[in-house]
Every structure is written in structure tokens, then in C-alpha cells.
Image (cartoon, rainbow, N blue to C red):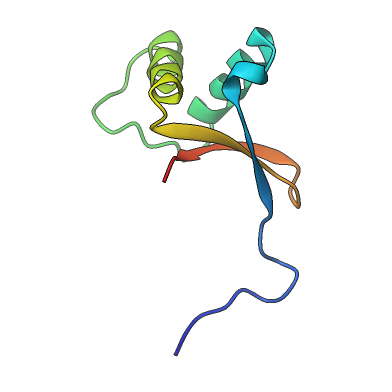
Length: 81
């Protein structure tokens, strides 16, 4: 049996090239991402600046990407597949 999301509830998102964002906006998106409730940094921990730098490096190396979800009107950083 396969699981399906109810029609109309699936998220539709668009990839946002981080290079096209204003540097301040990019900084804010990353900061919001790393400070979200439930963010699991495990043993990595570190300061806010270190976490932002880690995410920025992952964006540059294309390990992660920014996706803007149209339904929820929110940005998220997800693993790039």
C-alpha cells in the first residue's frame, strides 16, 4: 500500500540560488535556519557565527540548497539531491 499526501496539501517549492540573494537576506535566512526550534546540531554545536559559516560552506559546495515553499511561504535549507 502506498502513502499519498491529500490532494492540494503537497508542498510546491522553487530552488533559490543563494548567489542571487542580497548578502543581508542570505545571512538572515541562514541565521533563522540554524536557530529554529528543534534544530539538531548534535556534537557540532558552536557559536551562531560558526553555524552560519558551516551552512554557507555547504551552500557553496552544493551539499545543500535553499528552497522557497510556495504554499507555506517559507524558505528552507535542504540537502541537495
